[in-house]
Image (cartoon, rainbow, N blue to C red; front, side):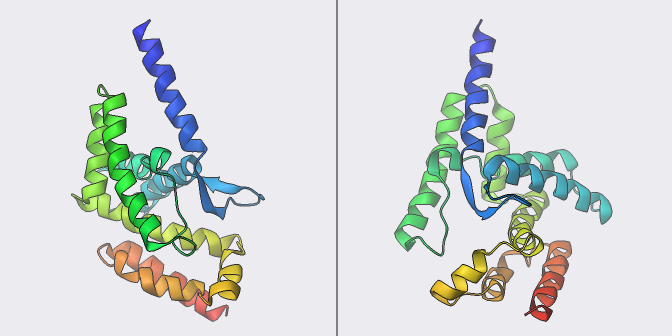
Length: 194
């Protein structure tokens, strides 16, 4: 059955997505979060915030962008910018572009997925900007909430604190007012806990 074969190939892609490990720890565990867990959290939190702030955002588009925003990492992998060369970071960005093409070739019938990947990648609307900004916020918020030792080690090894990174990343959340306000509040909380 052709459809069953397509289904199993797509499920294999989701398994590969679960195997992409991120830098930060998952809450209350010793294992690093994977891309599938991360994408689910982005999706559910985007939906929650859109309702909380009564934002005029398309919920379906938000969820689609959140679910696919890192899907290219199945083939491109993930890199930690603090422990990777500029060359490696550039290669990852190029790899994600190539991965979008590869996924489109492997699953040509899933046009909505390709449209969502492209929309997020191009930041073509308010929903993609919101998910992009939320992705930056949640990285720091998760690290702060679970007391992930990532920045303790980074500060020791490279002299970079969570506040240094948050200041650097601030420009990436400026487009989205609600996320920027939450981000600024988190910066105040982190600063007061120093």
